[in-house]
Length: 350
Image (cartoon, rainbow, N blue to C red):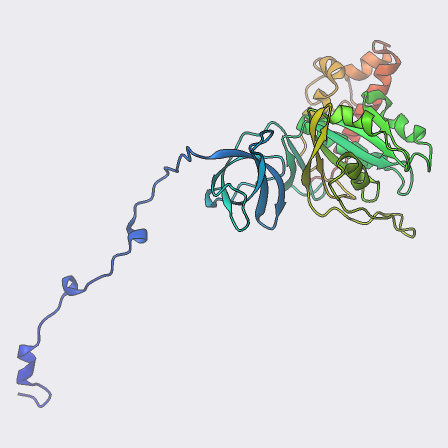
């Protein structure tokens, strides 16, 4: 017997894999399933605002029990953006008491979706608001100067989303907006004009009742001032225009839904942060033409792939206008359509 061997080894037990005890892990051993909870007890709410992963939602809208609730997005919605104006289903604590948190588990089908991209080369779209049916484009007659091309971009985005655009020109006491408004004569837009010291609230409010209207505009045009006049308790921050650059300072930092409540009825004003650009990387050109129903009908006779621009060969719309079929109004509408299409076609492509 070797010196390293011992008779004691014969008494030691032998072990195999079956003798090793493994602590059970229920989560790891649970089989995966695609079945998701039905959330039959979920209640519907309107998203009013988003702030750092927390959502302010309105429960029991238009009822005596109406109240706001703070909610978080459920894990199964982590790849789906929840935006202002969404109708969502929530579960959990919906009392709205301090310290409580509900959970958003479903997004209901959207009727419209207003989107924009960071610039025309960006294929990634950013959702601005859901379920709006009107867009109120706010521009100033002066200070800052109105930008036709930016308004064109808002119009393109509105037509693409199936939203009715309207236009309000503020600060008309500083400059005559007639020349600027002539650019949109063929579109049949509802146009409001407002002086710095005299906002026609009754007239504007009448077109907002019964609608969900998203307010858009360049920084410094007076958009937040208008919202505060329409919704007295909104308390949206307002700013001034830089006298050197002629640019407005960003004051509204987030999109928020505010209720317009007057004796004649109710509506929603959705105030968005001021922007200096509005990318159209997501827009479908066909949706622009569909908004010009009279011209779209004629366009059915155009050759496949027609751009409907002035130099488009055999364009039925150009030929119809040249033949005087649509009159002066048709000429103005075609000019507006072609300007919008030109704005869209000038996007860089890669």
